[in-house]
Length: 289
Image (cartoon, rainbow, N blue to C red; front, side):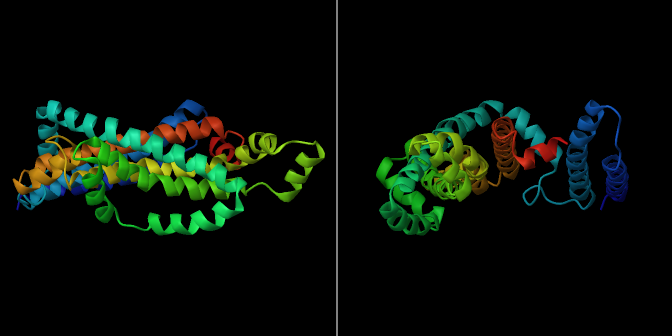
């Protein structure tokens, strides 16, 4: 056991925790300083977790096959950039983004159709709840058999995972406007489409973006898991499954780190678009205050 490294990591973690506790209670006169402090708190918290992780692994001499140190994972990251980029393009740029766009788009369109048809609402929604409960590990092998081993089968899995959250949330959002507001639109002789565009869709945007944010993580999970069941010799899921078998756990964690950064960035982009579109919503105005 390397006691000095372990003690140093714990001391740094406690000091950073105390600084974070002080920082979150501060209110600066400058709005830029407040935003910088708001951004610094999670960054510093993440750094302290990495330092503590490094200290525990090195302090207790944990075997790298069980848990590699962050420094070891970083070394693998910078030495495997071409491989990681190829896996990122295969999984994220092809499977995730394509499946996300198709699944969310189809879910939105079908929700509009269901809103127009009581028959579809009573017939399709129960079926949708059933399909959405299917485990991805059961659907992925079937999609691989149907669409082949390349990224198209992963797109199919992502579409299945993202379609029904978008469908259910959009239907709930379209019903969010009150009867009084709809009656007011009728007094203006507004058509169904005019009511949809000017009243019901704006009221539904928070629900729709909630589905978009949920699907941003579901899409990545679905694509990676689907690659466990058949893929060309490239992709995040393929790399994780093969490197685990070779006991190259540092490469596995490197892929996990890339997936985590990509998923967080994707979620952040959707959240920024939400703030721009639904700036009028109380939750957004309250956050800005």
